[in-house]
Image 1 (tube, rainbow over the protein chains, first blue to last red):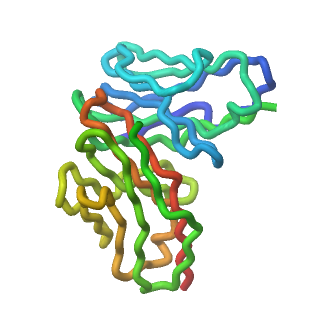
Image 2 (tube, each protein chain N blue to C red):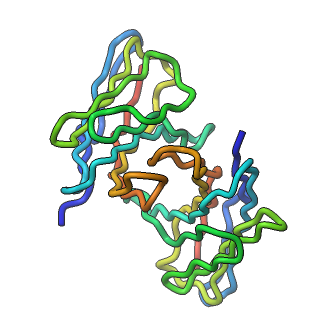
Amino acid sequence: KAGVTQTPRYLIKTRGQQVTLSCSPISGHRSVSWYQQTPGQGLQFLFEYFSETQRNKGNFPGRFSGRQFSNSRSEMNVSTLELGDSALYLCASSLAQEGTGELFFGEGSRLTVL
Amino acid sequence: GDSVTQMEGPVTLSEEAFLTINCTYTATGYPSLFWYVQYPGEGLQLLLKATKADDKGSNKGFEATYRKETTSFHLEKGSVQVSDSAVYFCALSDPGDQGGKLIFGQGTELSVKP
């Protein structure tokens, strides 16, 4: 069974640009969550989607957005990039319809903003 | 709001030593508690979990008991191996949250020397 796949794995952008990251969940998983991981702030929850609907959102500015498609694949977008957006962005999928079950994480997309 | 506090690392142990990584939490309700592990170059994976007070989660020789009276979920292993070298994250989920949202501690890096 294929795991959670994130693309691209590495990318470099400059301030002011925008970026789109993609996540393919495990087959059959309808919940997709996104997290930002940095050395200073650790792992922080961005948002979660279930059946194309955003169910939960963390405390990030509106420059961070996401969506989920009918096949459960998800994308997140960061507009007007800032140096502080440099991070590892992790996607996780889950079977859970309610509450938080086991999350299965991808290896992440490492974004560097210059 | 809810939060998780872990003992700071890095922690360096010799093979076969006893491991304890402390984790305490603050939550308004009765959260579910988790330990995730991140091996070098890999995504996070669930190590163990407990969903109610006095539950003991266990996996791969690791154990943690949900202590409501001390709001703790300390991770223990009786005899660590070099292959246990990784970063360990304590996390909670609030039952009031719709899926996918975990609040993580800062992570504790464990290094086991032969």
